[in-house]
Image (cartoon, rainbow, N blue to C red):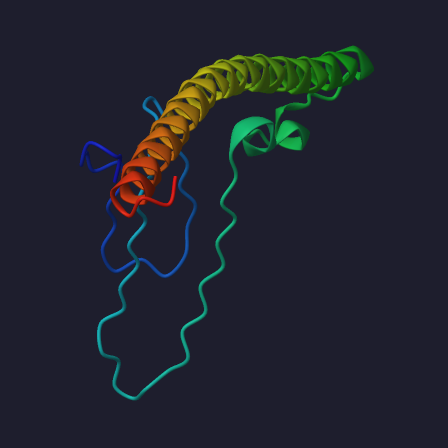
Length: 142
């Protein structure tokens, strides 16, 4: 199932087979495999080869008999790898900019809180000084 709940493939009473799809939306895809009760009991083996990105293409099956077509297939595979690397670098660059902006805003907030804390400490110190002065004046120690 797709992240939106669209059923991509459904098969009943299947002993073996292959299935593939191209993701058209981002998110988590769901694969459910169930086995009904067997009489007599049997051991069930499930082999999954879950691929994503550049690795999802099986380029060996695309290749034709000609060497030129084989080279073309290799170039297509490399081009897909380059595009994948470029997209990853662009994503990391965007994340770096987001982190830089977060760091800058956190730094300015910490500076504001530091000055606020300093102001509070100085006002408490002034209040303590005033309180002690009036206390000692009442006791006639000053």
